Image 1: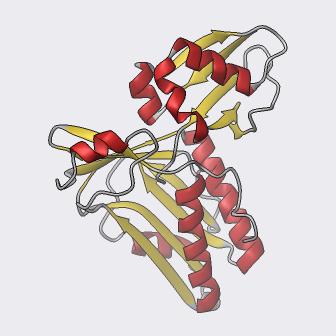
Image 2: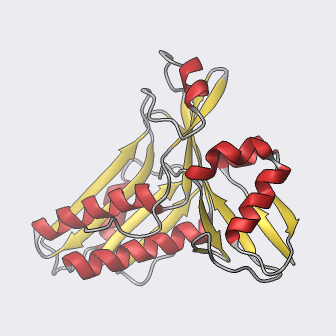
Length: 249
């Protein structure tokens, strides 16, 4: 069988390609595809303990069986729709988020029944973060230097699906149905917004809980990768992606 493999962020750079086709003996699983990929590109092997997988646009375990023609996305550690009426705004934007992005989203979401609008804005900063597994040496090379800009890359269909899952969870857990998750892609200069969250509800406690949950889960689960750019190189950030809510939360 043949399967299409997509690579992102650090994996893409190490392998020197965004996608490739693997020929696998049937039957085969996602784990078999990863093993064949590493055999072709041994430089990817150190990332094996932190990689996650998506099959045909949805997170999937390594044990899932593959069919001829399937697409498998290898999900390295992550940093990190469309509007559904006035209830949800779930977007990836390549253009800069306006300084009044929180106000823009609040105007689009809020209704006369809302007594609370809570917003969160994630801003790029100059101090380095935690490097992704396998990037420790490169991070050490840039130790003591200031970050010049951040760059974001996303597996867009799956990222938007994860945004929708998070919005469903927010509605079920906190009763908050009006939620915005808007994330940048591409280069984001220092001091500019990379992500905006807005939650609207009748009561402030629910709005605060919803906004906090939305940003935490977006960072942990959405297939969005962040690289910190320095004058003479860059370092990919992140931790292994979760494929669902935090256990026990």
